[in-house]
Image (cartoon, rainbow, N blue to C red; front, side):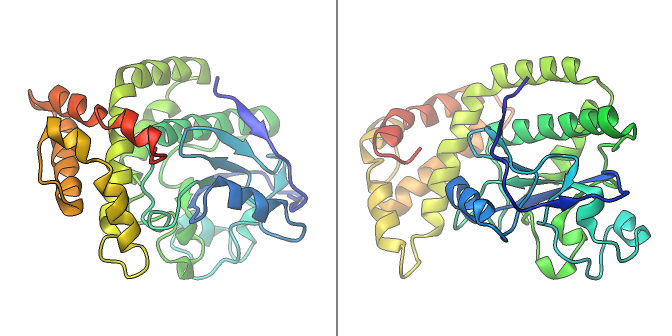
Length: 283
C-alpha cells in the first residue's frame, strides 16, 4: 500500500446528503510547497489529494467532506455533471491535484512515479467510497473526469498532455481487480520500469529547460543549466551547446521509450546524466 500523508486543512464543507460519484483530476502550476501554503490558508482553496512528482500522496480533506477546488458548474462537458444540473460538483466528487510547476503545470505531463501513484489513488478512492458509502465509482471516462469538464472556462485543466488514454487504459485494469491484487500489479510494473522512470524524469527536466531557451526572462538561466550537461556529452555525443544538449537528450529519450532493440541502450545513456543532474539540483 502507498502511504498517504494527511495534512488536513481548514477549508472544506459537508457533503450534505450527497455521496461521491465521480473523481475529478486537476493539475497545479505551483510545486507542492505552494499548494500546501494555499490550502492551509484559512478561507482559501482545497482539494482532497495531491499526487506529487516523486509519487508521494498528500491528503488535505477527508473523503467524507467536500473540498473546494472544482469551483462553479459552467457549461459542463461531462454528461454526469450535466445530469446533476446546477448542483455544485464539489458535493458529489473526490478531487485529485497533480503537482506541476511553472512551464509544465498547464501541459499536464506526469512523471512515471506520479502516474502510477495516481492510478493507485483512483483505485483507493473507489475502494474507500464502497466501504464508506456502499456505492461504486466506476473507473471510466464517465466517472473519472477533468476539471475542465465541469467548468469549460478552466481551459485545459489538467492539461493538454495529461495522459488520459494511458490513464483510462490502466484504470480499466484496476477496475477489474481488488486493491490488493492491483497493488501487486503496480509493484511489478514499477520494478520493471524504475530505470525508465528515471530516464523519463531526466528527459522531462531537459525538455522544460529547452522550452525556456528563447524566453527573455528565463533563457539565460536555462542555457547555463543545460551547459552543465556537457561532461556527459563526451560519452553520449552531441553538440556542446545548450540547444545541442537539449537535442541529444531528446534523441536518446525517443530511442529509450521505443520498443526497438536500441531502447535499453538509450535508457543506459540517459541514466549517465543522473548523478550530475542530482549533484547540480536538476533532479
